[in-house]
Image (tube, rainbow, N blue to C red; front, side, top):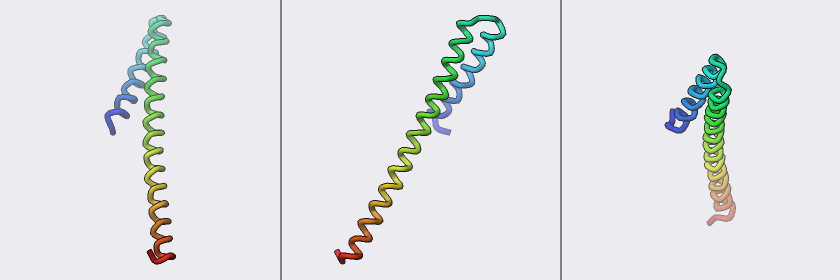
Length: 78
């Protein structure tokens, strides 16, 4: 697991614990802070996943273009 993904998961877990602790002790501020941390961790996780997918799609597109160029070279003999 990458450091970014681990950090995002850790934020989600600690945020969830803080949120739960806030609920148990009746501290709305702590509960809200935990919810914000948990949500920020999930946002980081989603952003990291989107970046990975964009990188994957870029590599796929590069392969398609390279294949098309090779095909055209074969057709036109250059």
